[in-house]
Amino acid sequence: MSASITVNGRDQAVEDGETVAGLLERLGLGARYALVERNGDPVERTRYAEVSLEDGDRLVVARPVAGG
Amino acid sequence: MSSQDPFVVAGREFGSRLLTGTGKYDTFETMREALAASGSEIVTVAVRRIDLDARDGDITAFLPDDVLLLPNTSGCETADEAVRTARLARAGGLPDWVKLEVIPDPRYLLPDPVETLRAAATLVEDGFTVLPYVLPDPVLQKKLEEVGCATVMPLASPIGSGRGLKLRDAIRIMIEQAEVPLVVDAGLGSPSHAAESMEMGADAVLVNTAIAQAGDPVAMARAFKLAVEAGRAAFHAGLMEEGVQAAASSPLAGAVHEP
Image (cartoon, rainbow over the protein chains, first blue to last red):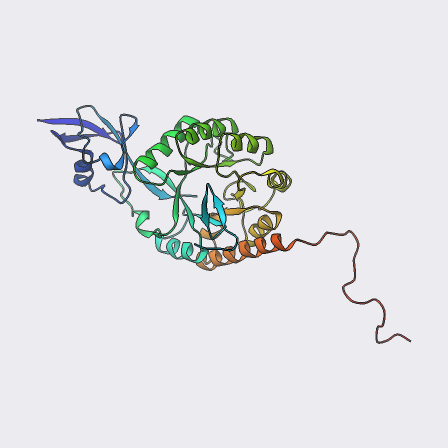
């Protein structure tokens, strides 16, 4: 049984009970600062390993980039 | 870092009065060297969605560990967008400091004062240390101070233009009445512009393009470091008063050829 979410607007299948941390790892996004918003709310880094993804979730994954 | 003349923002002391941005470098390696040469202790970064199709390098691997990373809200055109970006950055482990930019105008990249003030109030209330980027406006400065901003950062001229202190007179008023540190941010194209800002009494300057796009960014970073230090020293020393006519430096009497 898997759920479907979006990551930065793109459809993404996730395993049942997969956490934010698990997904970041699987997608190779586990950088020093991966910034995550779930359904419009920021997710605290300390909770990445606790928050399970649910069908229909909309994730935004951002990170620091060069800028002034 | 210890310093005789620390730059104090929100109770935190910094030895350097040169803040630097990380944009527009040809390579992250050059950026890393330039940041080191600048002596900066506050370094800005932008926040963007990860492009899942084009994973370029991770800038954070090239940033020094001993600087304060200052996420900016560039790309935000409204207060709500800026607040959202700042909260995302903080939740993800970046500092709770934010360089607040709310810029709806793509041509001159001028900040929206109304939305900036609105976002500043919300973010201060939410526990952020807020460093807003603004047009030099002494009235707006007071309002930003009243809502609890940690600095006010007026632009010298449009971002990336390198035109220097085009808005000097308004910035001078802001310096005169500042109750929180004033950082001249944007438009400084040369070390002399930075030195001039510091001589006027600015507490610090923020420079990006003038270093990153220099012929030798690392050498230019050092030049800006020296200029900021020189300008600050000159401010403390007290500049002479300007005159309209000449005033001789050498004695007028006793020239060798006198009869």
